[in-house]
Image (cartoon, rainbow, N blue to C red):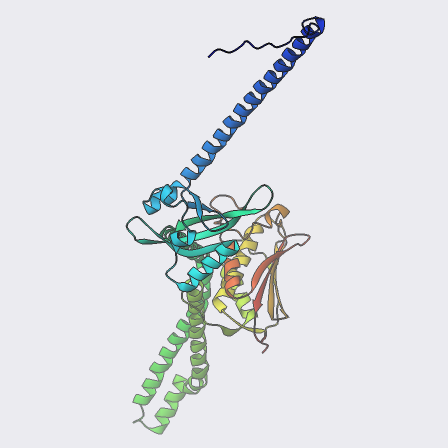
Length: 445
């Protein structure tokens, strides 16, 4: 079967000059379209390369995450998981895709499971929800999950992102943190004890002098009482002699004077023994770690005791002024207050080492809720840049070997244990520390 050739009429004008121009225009349009196609192809390849790089970056980040990651849609169906979930569950990622999240993460507690499902349905964020993840062997592994809504570029909700971590790792982290905190507290206790012993060593000379005075007149009284006892014994042995002989012996031994003097001797001896006992108790409060009860005590006497402890070991004691009512009494931990005063006075003495006309002033007055105790000196003072650091441990402006940097830190902590506070106040010359000690109710003799 043959076909007749097509007879397509061609206009003579088309093959003329106008026809050539038309063909040239068509070729130009084809070149333009081809150029645009090449540009579009190049841009498409660049975008594709950027998408591949972004995909590789996201995949590498997801693969490097130690926390498990689950991405699901608005219906709660899993769309993607990371390698951490595969490692934890022992199941491939493909086995999770398409499953409802409520079937993968479950809680043995009904209320937790209901809360988990309710948050998922509402697309709400939540934190620290404890659920279980079944591994390949069916063992339920407890994990802590955080959830946040996922939105597209138009801020429309498109699903949720869940991030979780095995609770065992969290517990281990908590245990390590707790151990570190305990070690820190023990180190603080050792520092406090070390500072107490260092301060105690500096005050040994003063304490020895304080003990020497009462012990000296205790010994003197006991020697006098020994002599009196020998005389009385001699008189008692002579009771069988004549009354005249006894009267002469009584006058010879001075029994009337002994009878009048023995009472004051005993009282003085008891006073000296009590003074020694008080000093020993102060030492125990100062250096011991035992818990100390609150008790009423005279504040002015505590000030003088602290001053004596420090000044006895000072080569050139400064002038001291005490402005406190002798009958002012507070109820607090005497050992704590005593140690703070010792540290503040010692700090003032150290600051006045090269100050002419050195002077330390101690004062106290009642305020709302307690008593404020002030220790002030006329030394070089505290530079403004150091005032925010003086209560930090190991901070000191003294030369190496002259200070531990713990005295003010320990005092600050002791004031806090009393329920009060220790602060530094600005003055024109020198330094001024104010200790607030709560007293409920304030006591006055």
